[in-house]
Length: 318
Image (cartoon, helix red, strand yellow):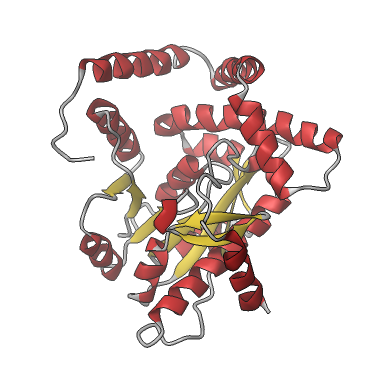
């Protein structure tokens, strides 16, 4: 979308509606807000075929041998988590240290998680847990460190909504870089020791790299691999997941750089790097399927020659 796009009348209506919803929810306690949103999501899932089709369809791809009772259990838990994601996003600007202590936890301790963030570099995230709240947790740990968090984001068509989201994230000390801006901005920020996050598991269209993901080919962006190949900064995969007690748990794992020459063999370097982080995400989704955002169309695009692609990756893995 062009930066100078005009605001249409429909954009005003859309923005007013969105703001009204958030203002209304703000009148209630966190617990009540969660209850309201959860009931709304359950109602929408009951009257719409899209929600159950996408969630159950994704689970069927990832777990072809799973019993129906187990699918049903994960499906119901996923609806609860969708409500938690929504209420946590709405709560974001008001999250206090006390709130975070009650609702957040770290797989290997807060100190290690904080040190990963304070060293700057690249973060690659997928739609697992709550990627928005992940950013809030990071910026709280980055206070007074001199390191800033920048998140690569797609500019919204509705400029009013885009401005509101930008201000909301800004209130949480999350800075945005838009995909329609120069890649040199990202390289400059990385070289200055900042932290740049890529939420990279979205459908990349026909020009993406098709990779096996949860049993089906998924078009994947090579952008993170390009930046990784052209820098020497630390690179970590970061995720979050919801526990049964309601806490959002954060985890991190360093992504292995391919044992290839990044200049002489750039294409295979980028393929190998992308394969590495996709496999990390896949393993975490299989461990915590209820926390994955099955609603997004991860397998929207398929290659024209799927068997050739499958054969390529089978040889690669062997």
